[in-house]
Structure formats: structure tokens, C-alpha cells
Image (cartoon, rainbow, N blue to C red; front, side):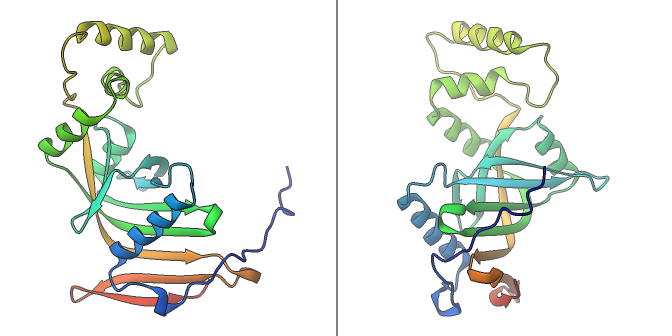
Length: 211
């Protein structure tokens, strides 16, 4: 399949240095808010790239569930491939793509587990069906068929029919502590606007990058 003729011009808006907030977390919040107002489906979806001890990368889409000055939080199964790779190599990269706004945000950082209390608090607020799905799944392990998963889901549903579903011990949050941010705005003729934030002496430095 030849896809060489698939292209488009990015013309929605520009991004100038004076438009950027000094704090990249506040700039991320601004863009996320604008993505939500644009009715983008799951604007908190981000591609998480991890790398194992052998240097072999993998990526998948996860959902950002909270962020503040401490970092960005997502939740997952601690037995999953992503969690195992984070254990081997705690450095990750994430990418938000809002193609409807012709924007991307790239973030690099180091990851650590959230507290158990944070994981349990979030789990308790999830819909019951999502709780059951998390409890029934041994993420990334081989299963014989879909019926195997559905049977485990229904078994747990019956087991906890009249009581809260406990947060599985192998399920919880990860906190990404960013070391750099890059904000990308598509522009005509591939002369895109790119700005990178990086820390220098505990201060965020902003630099324009060539596209």
C-alpha cells in the first residue's frame, strides 16, 4: 500500500513564544481544556512509550487521570507489560495527539508508583463494571479465549454481589515526573511551531525547535 500521496496543510493557528505560559504544566492544562471544549473524544488519551532492560521499546494508549505539580497519573495492572518494563526502566515518554486542533504534546520523565491509598481511592470511584473488568483481567497474559475472561468477570460479579469490589493488589497508579515538555502546533508548508521546556537549575527554560 502506497500512502505517499496522503498529506494535508495545517492552517488552524500558530504558536508564538509570547503565547506560552512559563509553567509547562499550566500550558498543558490550557491545551487540555481547549481540547475538551473542542469535543475531542478522550482528550486525555496519551500514547505511553516504555523500554525494557534490553532496550526494546513498546507503546500503547492509556488515559491521563490526574495531574498537578507532582506529575501526571495513570492507572494500570502492575503485572502488565508496561508495568514490567517500567520496573526494568523507569524512564518513559508520552504523546498527546489532538489532530482536530493540529496539536501534539510530547513529555519525557521518570515514573514511580503512586501510594496505595491513591490507587484505592481512584478504584473506589470507578464504575462497578470497570472495577470488575480490572479485577478479572490478568493483563498481558495469554488466555485461551474470550469466554475465559467473561466467566471470570461473572464469577467476581456474583462473588461481590452485595459488597464493594476491593482494589486488586496488582492494580494501581503510576506517577510520571516530567523532565521535559514539547508543544507542537501544525503550520503550513511543514514549518511547524515547536517549543521545548526543560529544567535548568530548577527553572523551566523554553526554546523554539526547528520543525
